[in-house]
Length: 169
Image 1 (tube, rainbow, N blue to C red):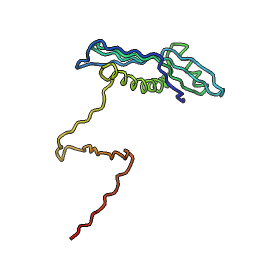
Image 2: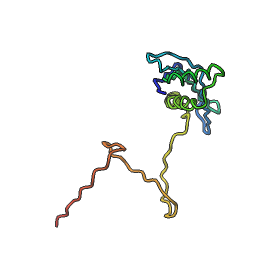
Image 3: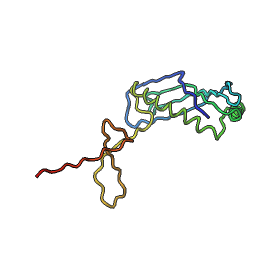
Image 4: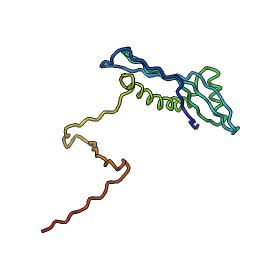
């Protein structure tokens, strides 16, 4: 499987009231259509998965809905298996559903996060938080050490060695 692209065809965002504390967000993904397109290579098939992604807030302070298409290239035999399952009962094969849904979720969650900021809704998923904690006792187990990175460096760059200064007497 090779992902060719993911495009949004419809974006709807609505904030009904001001955000409140204790808001739950229910996220859903539904594959609505699966269509086939031929490619120049007869061993490969392009599949287009039409989908709908939704974030519903509880209490009902707003919602975000994204419709789109995921384009992926499969070997011809795998594509036939996916289409056969879809045509018979509108379900994707169990071994194929995870990568398809995860690809949709990866792009849609990021887009929903940006849209939620624009319309003034809470983020649709929990964002990581950092807290400074008091020094733990010696027997408390391992601790996490966070170091600052130089502005010109990257997370992968190695720190410059310290230069020793000679003291003058």
